[in-house]
Structures are given as C-alpha cells and as structure tokens.
Length: 345
Image 1 (cartoon, rainbow, N blue to C red):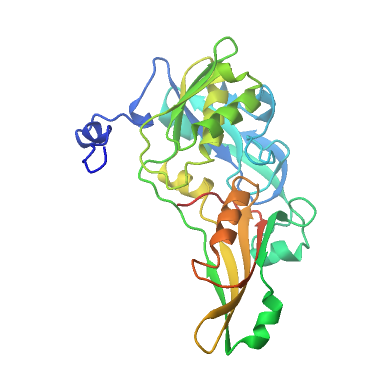
Image 2: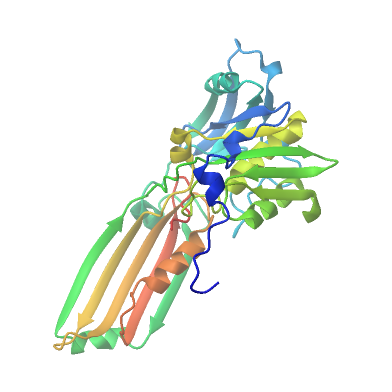
C-alpha cells in the first residue's frame, strides 16, 4: 500500500449520514437511563430523598446495594466506586441511577431526588493537597510519585553563565468531542452483559464489567460503535457509564440507553489534569544547556483513574527533546475533591 491513497473504511458511511452512533440505535422495550449525582465535593451520605408526588413504581432505581459483585471501576487502581454508597469524594459523583421508558419522565424523576450530604472539609487545590491538613486519599494525598534523574544536577549550577527559573500553571481542560458519552446495554444473569457505545478502549470496559458483575470474560461483550470524537476523554470514563447502563438493564430486565447531555458530560467526566510546573535551567556562556531541575505537580482529582500513566508521560517529556547532560524531574499526582482527571490527547 506504500505510495498509494488508501480510503478509510468508514468515510462513505460518515459523509452520507449512514454511520450509526449510539444515539441512533434503539432496541425494542428500551429504557432511558439518567444519573443522580452528589451536590457536594466531599461528605457523608445521610439520605436519598424521593419526592412523594412521583410514582416511583414506574421507574427502575439502582443504588450501590444493587451491584451484583464489586462496587468498583477496575482500572490501574481499584479505588473508584461505581456508585457512591456511604460517602462522596467529589461533586457530581454518581449516587443513584434511574430508568424509564420515557426520557422526559426519567429526567423529571432525576430532578425530584435529593441527595442529603453531611459536608466534610474538602481539598480543592494542589496546594491544599500538598499541605495534607485534610487527607482525602491514602496517607498523604499522593496518588503517584515518579522521579527521573541523570547526571549531577546540583553540581551544574556553579558552572552556569546564567540560570533561568519559572513557574507555569495549566488548568483543567475539556476534550469537547462532538458526540457526548453514551452507552446502550442489555444484561441478565443467564446471558451476561453486552454493551454498545462510544469509547476508545474496549478492554478497559470489558475488565471493569467483569469485576462489577462477577462474570467470566466470555459472558461480557463490548462493542465499539462509531465514536464521534474522544481525544482521551473516552479512554477510561466509558467503563463508568457502561457499568451504569448495564446495572439498570440487569435490574429492569430490559435494554437501557444512557446518554449524557453536554452539561452533564462537561461537569462529570474526566478532564486534562490541572498542573503546576517549576523549571530551573542552567545555561553555559555558549548557550548550551547544562542542567534542568523540574518539579511537576498534577491534580488527579478524587480517584486514581489514569493519573499514573499521564504523570509518567509528563515526566518523560518534561525536559523536551534537547541534549542536556544533567536532568532531574520530580513528578507527583495529587488527590483532591475534584472529579477525577484523565487522558487528553
């Protein structure tokens, strides 16, 4: 194929409008799912209150007590629950799932539920996480620490003609794919779980569903549909939404489609890590790099997700592509009470 123009297999379907995304697919008897989320960044769940004017018998409701096996989204670490059970660790954390044949009724029901939270002190910045006055993860709020070193950085400063120092900050950034997150699921104890959706890493989703439902691998099937953009934002989070759609399907005995609107997608899903980076660089009189000392701190949010991988990439590339004999890069991913950070291309 070298030297030849090779048409993409999916081009024709997309330019003619025949490509089918998860929002285009409906199964007979399908329910529409929605998610009730925490209004607070950190605290104890005191109660879930249901408005009395709603006939709740019409709805399928799923809480953490309905999970067949392990209430965890398995990834690098197993610290993130599929549904908060007794406490919440970030605003917009999923607490309750609702499904109904009518999408409008499902949304009305969501707005008729109140999650009563007893607030706890929250950690909402890199600085607060470092201070560790309030420990929200592990022993010191450190999700991952990586250090790379070569040469003798501390000896190089005395040989420098000039030393340049700077501190730089980046904020959380939304991937803003055109198609929001969405999943369609069928699930029952006899046949297992099948999900179709917009995603990047089907084996992440497969492993997470096996753990969530306690099923062998051959009883879980993951189908990647046309994916309308992702840019890292659909790398690990689809495991969460697939779990939610499948739990609703498991309990109701009917297919369930769960698609976020833009506001929910932006509020609840993973973003690029906010970061604070300090560079100190020694330069010779001839303009050659002698040493770099770099500190890289990242806000990983409330759970580990893919922060160790993102931190690794950041540390490896922090010094750029330049020849420098003495380099030290210290990277730390910290836990806060923000929604978890994730991949961003």
